[in-house]
Image (cartoon, rainbow, N blue to C red):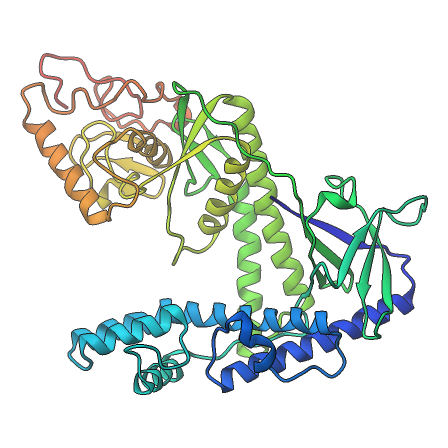
Length: 478
């Protein structure tokens, strides 16, 4: 399923727009009231049967719009509480338990309160446990969630209905929205979406959002689903890695998006300087200029990664693309943007396989030696055998090899992965077949071109290059 955007027609009657904006103001105000009421009552989640009796009634909203606002407030508070628990409260409870400040039973109760968002005594959870958890939340929870004026408005199937235009030529669709006046709807003309031909092609329930330029847009979920084709059993595999200076490097020795990094860095630094300047002045809200630059940055990454994904799918039909199952926490800049965008595009258009990313860019493709010192920027020089190669290709080829590695699972801890690789390297070194021989499997890529080769002076053929050819000789040693 995909989100489809329908824009409000530019020639819409201004009276209709004013009524829509008045509805949005009342909606946002009531969401704020509901959120503050939940925080004051220390309730971070509510059962369905208690929602209507818990919140104060709205003065101007219809009953269905009031229900949408209540559900929206509950979702915001619950998401905030769960995030704070995972990031801050849970590690704090673990630390207090290990230090002996709290008992194991008390820690168990606090864990359950945070994970289940319990607000009342339950079984072995007492009021003292609840008070202790809220004390931790007050000390480590930071600022509570804030509702901005730009909060989108949820329109359920009871408050909004998308209809086909009939014989009209003004709009592609009409959206009937409940207003502040009882039994009086707002009929809004919408500009169509090329992927939506009829009103029943989208699910019921729409989200209305006012853009930064002041234009209204309506987000709906398309009913039809699209799934990537299943790869054949003997499908060719291709490792894909986001490089240091490129958007993607493949295990067959091709780099994609080499021209994007300079553009990204220039725009990223402009945004960074502008944001730092506003922080020094104590300005918390984004300026229109900052919003425009961030939109350009996001658009740049989405466009270029989409172009790379299309090129890969076109050049490698019936191929299983192997990518990293990477944890992006703590990752900034182009890496974070490109990883998420590229993998999302590939998953939509072709079959993909995620593998454990631990040490794929530090493992020598010839001898298997793993060391952080093997890689420096885009240069890879093995500290054991002297193998030289382009570091981005080494990462992509490591991802490809990892897809056929039965000893390393996707969820294995990096510590366990390093132990497996170390034992394998020592076994290969001490084996009678020779050091490094047989390292490359039949699924390894073909020899690289000169653009990915870094040769050292005075090296023997096949030694210290990015070529996948192994050196000749009786022992096969480097």
